[in-house]
Image (cartoon, rainbow, N blue to C red; front, side):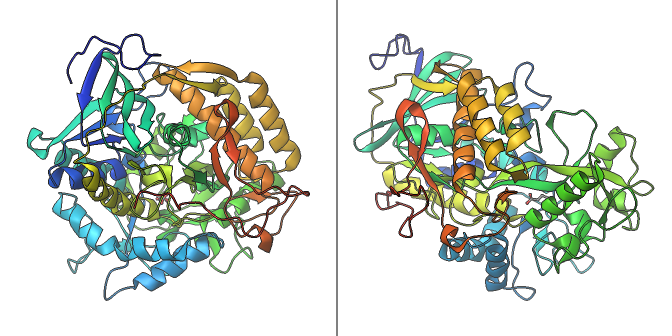
Amino acid sequence: MTGAGRGVGPAVPAVEWEAHADLVVVGGGVAGLSAARAAARRGLAVLVLQKGPMQQGGGSEAASEDTSTAFAQGGVAVARAGHDTSAAHADDTCDAGAGLCDRSAVESIVADGPRALTWLVESGAEFDRGPDGDYAATREGGHRVRRILHAHGDATGAEVQRALDAACGPVESGIARVIGASVLRVCTDHRGVTGVLAETADGHGVVHAPSVLLATGGLGRLYSVSTNPAAATGDGLALALDAGAQAADLEFVQFHPTALYVPGAQGRSPLVSEAVRGEGGVLVDARGRSVTDGVHPMGDLAPRDVVARAIASRMRETGAAHVFLDARAVEGFAARFPTITASCRRIGIVPAADRIPVAPAAHFSCGGVVTDVHGRTRVPGLFAAGEVARTGLHGGNRLASNSLLEGLVVGERAGLAAVGRAAMSPEVLDAAFRLAPAAPRERVQEMMTAHCSVTRSADGLAAAAAGITTAARPAIVRTRPGAEDAALTIAATAVLTAAELRTETRGCHTRDDHPEARPEWARSIVFEQGGGAMPRPVLPDSPTGGPAMDFRLDTAGADR
Ligand code: SIN
């Protein structure tokens, strides 16, 4: 970067540095680094901008742990020839997705899994192998066969992150990486993306670039307790809406059924992988009664929306703050699940001897920025991949371990898609700060946790919307905390609006007051940016306020 010492655009009095890149990647998890690596190998100058850990008061994550990737446990779902088929993987994905998956997107992404895995292994990742030398595979909720590949037992995400960090680290990789950089705005002109406005330790600056990939992860920090790192504040969603992209399926916030229950804890809650149930762990209440008996033919390995609902309902029924995962019969638990064992030990639980206290926690945003299977949004040059994106793979409920897969496949494709724009040399001419609504994040988290968790109702959703709206004020987005508060407010508004509109129960959206799925709602709810920088649902006018049958995603203007 060069210190420029001059302003760019009328509303930015002092831009302190400027840089140029062929591709700016925002976020350093599996999707961002897969894209960076693919693009750099094609000769693009890639700049990765990553927030890094909060400086103070924002959590305890170490520098390498601001991505959700680093915390993924179970693995990567891949249909391996001779064991499984892509069609079977696609079927399980669509069954979990509750009627909202885009089958062609699902087929495209899962079919590319084996090749992407090979690419990852060639990039340095090591996966666990069985005695026969073949990959060891386990099962998780919603998978009818063992197709979850894992690393170091339950540290798959950490291994993927380690391998990609190493592959993207060296100077000769062609990738520059700045940790401690917050992107405040994606800049565009009438032809599409021109770059980004960002804040780093050197102050405010702009990167001129024809392509920007948002790989910022999810929005778990909408909730008081989440399996996500502190950086998961919905930033990419807010940036994309501001730049003119659409978002969809945001009401489908997936709660992982089994986060470790720690009394009074707030912030990131350690995961207890579904793979524990895949290896024989069972869910019981304090009296030892099965939690999922009679709920679903797949029992404890039902899709995770079903299991999370069953746990939440048992907790309500018994007044308990958690249920138990009994894994005492799982042989060699500590060796197979070293990360979980360490988390349990920190609260005095030994899984070989004790039942593990678990409760659902916010885990994954199934919806996000609308893209095609190459990560392209409808804004030329703006890409999104990984959890921030909505490709149509997850529908109303993501199948376990499909997220690392999606990040790998779509991230790489987005990096390659950016090659087509590399010859352009746009300049950021308007880098004005955004004005966006922002409520204190504690208020947002309190409202979302109380009223928009595993189950929802019209009254609760309205109370949450009012609680956030009355606390929100227009703010100029100049800093990381400001950008995060605005993103959380915008994300919460969209999630609440969609959850209120969707008067049915489908996938991981459960309405106590509308317990059945309604066929007329077998469609996505799409958002664009509306007045006051608030998300606005793109619903056709209807006298009843209900959905219309011809409601479709608009990707017509996508940069293909
Ligand atoms: C888990 O290991 O249970 C989490 C995997 C995922 O979220 O896909």
